[in-house]
Length: 190
Image (tube, rainbow, N blue to C red; front, side):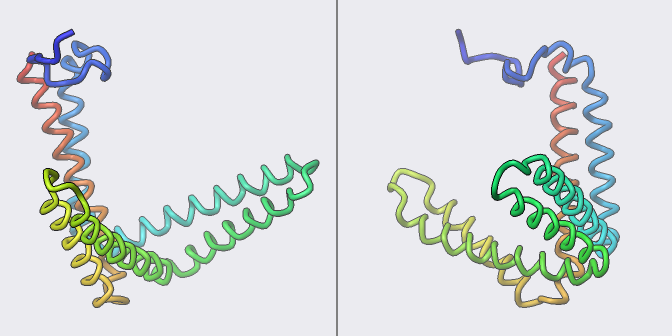
């Protein structure tokens, strides 16, 4: 088996011919994602609130699932814990719906703190990697995460109005660009 191939996609992605025939759908999907990302970036507050509300819905649905699972496990002595966990999820989801901006503030605080913590750890671990590894890139990645997290925390609570929506918008734009790139690469390889 030869690894040298002119085919841009790995074999595990399935039938290359089928993918190549549908390159236009991938480009269209990428354009749709990129447009959604630009819309989110155009109204980061609305994107933030929408994202937080989706998290609230997920919490309520998960909580109901936990409660149902708890009742299904009644024969187990500790089934009550599943019900309590489910109720906590439902209450937390209801709190998100009651005050999505407060929930956005809490999630932004967690995000900023997580970025600072991971940035610090990555920066320290970069110096413990073997010499022949890209330690500078790992260190730079850690410093960048630390700086972004610190920026979010310094601006908090005002940053909670735009951080989640901005991250969503940027993610959608990059995801769209990557799908457009995959589709155009498939078109060129026909």
